[in-house]
Length: 213
Image (cartoon, rainbow, N blue to C red; front, side):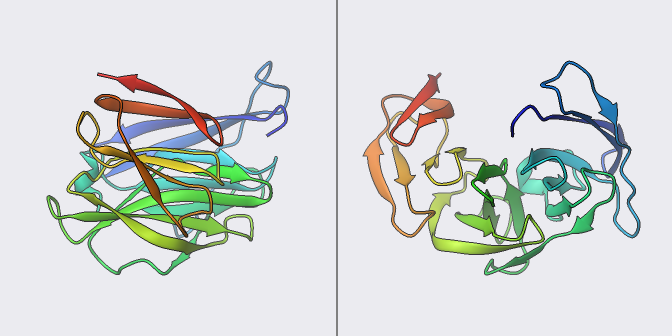
């Protein structure tokens, strides 16, 4: 937001833990200040994604594993209210218990955080994509709308601006569909993919740029 740029540096310690520090710029990247996180009771896991709502409220998707997403059985969200100096566990409600979770990159829409998450009972099992919304600066997230089946693709292609979300359940499949929602998962529509899409970026509520393999 505004001129704020955040960069997280993660140094792996084996495959199960990491050393992470945060650099924050409030002048559009001209200068950065290091903000080493204080963890308290939280483990310092790998940071897979980060988003700032403003200069003090932030959300991070974290996990203990470095392997494929199908191995991330302990992925979770954490949040900060002091610009990344300290972090706390984020509460999530409405998701299936147990199994595998894979969080996408959080998006900011007005004063809300929105993040996608794929859940599956086991590696290789059929999974579901959900949209989670936070109205309290990342302290808690709740499911919005209905889930979208993504088959065994635990890492579908997802592009979201917080209000509109496009999903390609099977990356690289030229015979599949793009699923779209403009009401945070309450309704979904689909259209055939123009080719084997491997990446997608929204450029507006009804437009996007796709990378086709």
